[in-house]
Each structure stands twice: as structure tokens, then as C-alpha cells.
Length: 145
Image (tube, rainbow, N blue to C red; front, side):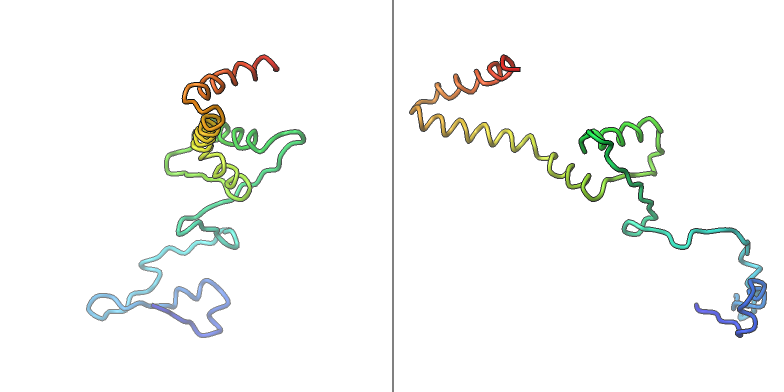
């Protein structure tokens, strides 16, 4: 329903008291009988993510810090605050791209190990030698560190 006042009554919120709505049985009911009009400050606009009201919290990286440190820090801070279950958060921008790229890191590592095993198997023409070589790699890495 769209209601409209004459232009001289649109200058002030008290003009809303002059509006009447059709009620049951055709009786006209004043708008003030079914609403409460109050004056207070409001944001000029409300952001939404889909149909849900949302806010954006931005952060920059401290010098010498990695994006993974910042993402972990934000997650730890929200855990310490103890947000209610009705409040949901997600990353956007570079942080979201970082999370997306690291979410499949386990599968990528597994595929890489399988590919290396196959290549070593072809080179050594054996099923056992690639396992011997791959099992020795982690210990060699730790010795160099």
C-alpha cells in the first residue's frame, strides 16, 4: 500500500498523524493507532549480504606479517569475544582468496606425492624404490634445518 500526503504536510513527521488506513468493515483507522512514531538517528544506509544485514570490518597487515597470521588473529579474536550463534562471519577479498586456495592444500599435497611416486617408479622401474626415496625425504629436510 502506498500512502501519500499533500506537499504541505510532508515537511514534518507530525503529518503522519493525518494518515488513515482502511480497517475491518471499511472503517478508517488512524496510522498512529497501529504504529509508534519516534525520532532517532539511523545510519544513512544498511549494508546487506544477500538479504541479511551485514557490516564490513577491514584490516591491514602489520609490517612483516603474513596474511595467514592476520586470518588466524581475526579468528582467534572472534573466538575470544564469544559471538552469539546468530552472528556469522566470513572473509572477503584477498583473505577469502587465501582461504579458498589453502582449503584444498591437503588434496594438492596428496596428488603431488602420487605424481612423484609415479615418476620415480618410471625412472627406477620399481614399485619399492620410490617408497624408499620418498620415506627418506622428510628426514633429509630436517637434517638441513
